[in-house]
Every structure is written in structure tokens, then in C-alpha cells.
Length: 429
Image 1 (cartoon, rainbow, N blue to C red):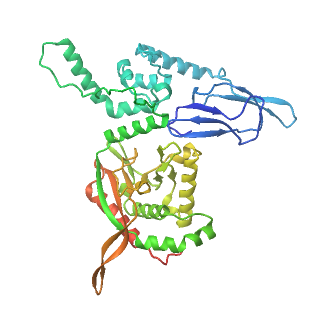
Image 2: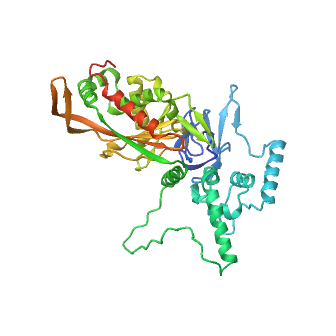
Image 3: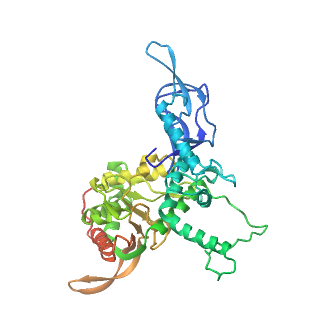
């Protein structure tokens, strides 16, 4: 499920007890903090028991079902690992963790009824997070539970500010006659009339909201914009899209061409392909391009094209089409959305001329592609300038000003522009 995934929610059982299951056949649908996906069977056999109900939250590594198989001698055997078969060492570690948690007065359930998993409580103990602080963290898990990612994000970006606020509040309580101090601004209550409709945010919606707020709190966002003449690309696509489909079996859009230009430009500016870890910069060797894609429910997800700089136009087209199709069908796997080092989003698909996208953490930059439009433009020739119709678009570059200055951010999109405008209409894919 990926290193950062600690638990998953069972959303649907695809098989019932007594059903025959083939190897690699999907058994269950799950939802994690990262993505919804199907879990296939490792073996062929008969499903004899389901250990969890739909909507149950299960830790990674737990047994969720039992499948009865046949060995080579046709003798029945059961392939399962009982949770009771934990080693003495594991039991000792678990007790040590529980004792440490109890010593810090971190209970499983707070006074307000909030439940905290052993993993979250263990992190809270190690980081000296009090129960009061845990109570204040907004959870994105099932039933608003605080997940591993929630508490880690809090520790990284919010805790210092929260402590300062708590000190001011305590001071006000202990010294009611003191001069009033500036309190934290809270959201004004929203009035609801009888005709208004209240819609509960989806699990994915909550995750996206949390991820976006955390990114803005982490990175100093600045933007650069540039206009690109893509007339040659438009002409080339019109001349070659039918031949491309007949030869490769794939529809060619502008996106693969743009992604190739970005990947090649990153090779020239490797310091845009980095992450920040405290006071250290991690320079990524692989160029893994995230591609924002729409889900069926209207939310966005960012599948990743691994080693994008090593793909030619045909390979990039296949990768783009495959990830986009599987995103729309809800068939992305956890590995499909991990490991991204730079992200591209196409706001032009919604008709926007340009946008100011939020950085996809832990990356330091993101590029937004605006809509391609026909516009009047000045065309320079050896015989003089004249006005003509050209296909143009804006590209927007959001970058983290902590580590990417305006010079690097501006030079990067200028190089992307030059790469796109240099497209040869005689290009042979």
C-alpha cells in the first residue's frame, strides 16, 4: 500500500463466503489516505470467512479474509495467519508502547469521545503531544479519526502556532484583569436557512482540503506566467492525429507533447526537481511527472508518470492515456500516485486561460497549462512585421520561494516555452 499508508477502510466486498476465487481476481475494494483500489487474491480457492465488515478500518498487515485452497495432493488446507500468532517479541514491544502511552496519559478515547489509534498515540507520546493537542487536530480518517498523516502534518507545521495560542488563552484565564490580548481569528458561524442544503464532504474531499491547506502553510507560494505560441504543435497534431491513431492505437492530445517538454526542461534545471526536508534539500534523480486527472466524482487525483524523461512521444501518449482512463474509472493503484517529483495540471481543459495552482507536497513546483486559443498576434518576418492569427496559451508556474528564487522559476518556464515553440511540424514520432 506504500510506506506512508498505515490503515485502510473496507468499502465493498466483491466476493461472498462460499464463492470460488481465481488467482489475481479482485476480492475487496478498499480506500486509503492515498487512493481507492481493489485488492486481488494471491491464491486460487474458496472464500470461507470474512473477518471484517464493510466500513471497517483495518491496519496494513492485518488478515481480512480466509481462503481455503488445495495442495498438490488435493488435501484441503487453509491459507491464513491468525492475529493470535504474534511473536513474544512483538507482544513485548506492544506492551512497551502501551506502557509508554499510559505514562503520558494518552488514552484510547478522549473525554469528548474521540478515538485515537495505537499508532497515533505512539507518535503523540514520542513527540510529547498532549491529549489537548490531539483533541484540536482535525482528522481526515473515517468518522473524522486522526490518522498518522494528520498528526505528522500537525507536528510539522501547526504545533508551534497552536502552543503560542494556548499560552495566550491560559494567560487570559489566569489574569482576567490584564490587558486584553489579540486572540486567534475563528471562522464566523454560518447561518443556515430552511431552504439551504447541507452536503457532507466526501472522504476524498476532506483529504484534498487538508492537503491543500497544509501545502499553503508549508511553502511560500509565488507564481510566474508566460505566453507560448503553440501554432506549430496545433498544425502538427491536426496533420498527424489520424495517422497516429491508426499506427499506434492511441489518441494523441496536446498533453503528451507538453509533458515531454516539461520533462526535458527539468533535465536542464535539476534544482526544480527537489524536495525540502527541514534544512536539507533532497535533489531527486528520477524525473517522475505527476499529472492532475479528474475523478468521476469531480475530485482531482495526481497519478505519476515514472521516469518521464526516458519516454518518447508514443510512450508518453500511452502513459498519459492509461493513467487518465484508469483515474476516471477509479482503477488507479496506490503505486500509481506515489513518487512524483514535479506536477503538471491542465486548467485549460476547464476553459481557464491560466491559474495559480497549489504545490503538491513534498514537491517544490507545479505547472498549470492554460487553454489554447486563437488570437491576433504580431508576426516578425525578414520583410517586416504583420498581424496574423496564431494559437497561443499561457503557462503558470507556482514554486516554493523558500528554495526556488524568481530567477530559476522564471528561467524554467521560459525554457519550457522555447521548447514548445521550437516544435517542428515535420516531426516524425
